[in-house]
Image (cartoon, rainbow, N blue to C red; front, side, top):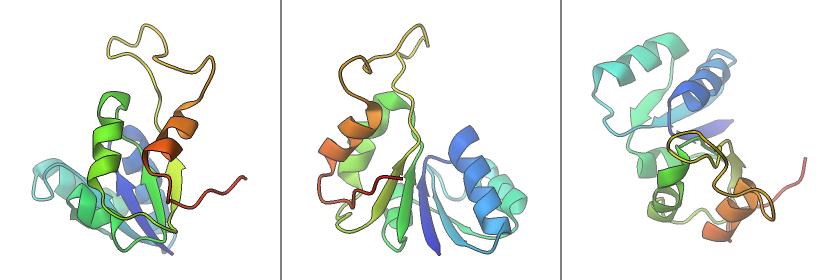
Amino acid sequence: MNIGIVGAGNVGGTLGARWARNGHTVAFGVRDPNSPASRELLQKAGSGTAATMADAAKPGDVLLVSTTWGVTQQVIESLGNLTGKIVIDATNPVLPDLSRLSLGTITSAAEQVAQWHPRARRQSI
């Protein structure tokens, strides 16, 4: 399966490396594809590519969004056409100081992400 990952920190990097080691084609969307951190991530994964976030989102059948909450809307809106892609939301809608959730009492982060890109494929699991 072709998997794009937007945000390759603790969550995206860990899941992507595991998927790559299990034979999936993984594109990690990162701020700087040529950075030492990106090279280290690819070495940990054993395969995969580092790309811009928009380039990582293009070829994937599945897109994992694992950005910090404060930039999630901007990132999703910058990804281009996600029509038909399965989008997995792995964000946590916490305030920058981690003191509490910025939303979650009447809606969830996943519902908000779906509203930001309504043509992505929705699938309940």
